[in-house]
Image (cartoon, rainbow, N blue to C red; front, top):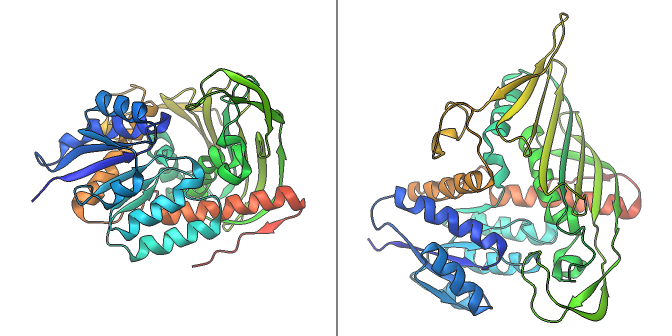
Length: 387
């Protein structure tokens, strides 16, 4: 049997995370079963650099040719938001295994079309919800399911970044609603919404939401800008028409309430996901800024102090780590690799990937649409779960 060829479409910042994950885990399968074949980007220098760093055999500049290539079986789609739906749809129709970056699409209608295509396709497909693989959060989910926290009452999820806090960064597609959709909400709030669903289940209603644009315009670059880097700026500015900060209050189908906030201008935050889960009998909380443990408190009439729960080999996913021992922290690159490994295992087994599926990407898109609508109408929005 010929090896399954892997291609990454989009050689920017997040494409490197995919490349590193494939490089790390492809060898765990049968010898010669998986081949790191192609990196595709319209910028040949970027594609060549990524391919050389991670051992991919070649490069391309036309994604349609990559999708049509019979030697490509597995695709990671790492393009700007406005291209996700088009390329994912083409890949699913072509029968490729697909791992699409979040957000799955700019809105729920497009995401539903991808969900339908994924159901019809005879392949494995998934949305990049890598934070589900943080062992601490996976164990908190298990605790909720076991009833360790009692009845769910409240969840607070914050995703605070400062990648756009510098007004000297150039204008790009990220700051255009037509190409990025809602700004911080879709770019990083997608992860926050998925984490809420991962832990508490479906959202029934967005009670209210508020958005803020704190930097209303940015200078256009003189040349090409990659990721969040500085480049030489022109003297011409362009308007920012999507949110820098978005917050939403919601009610879940299980009766609990939730609050999410996402910011791309939170100075000093770097890239921080924090989660607090409250139940009638206990509380659990975690932050990526302290990745080596989570905290847990159980109700007691003798006092309910928080205990640090350090990483242990028996926690979900820890066995995959290079150093799977007690109290060894696990970071971003590792959990991203865990997701890649799970994706490849599903392909190898011929089974769907349920933990962060295209369906999950669609469900998140429905909640994101409701948050965006609530911020515009200043009124509650029901989340209509359509099959």
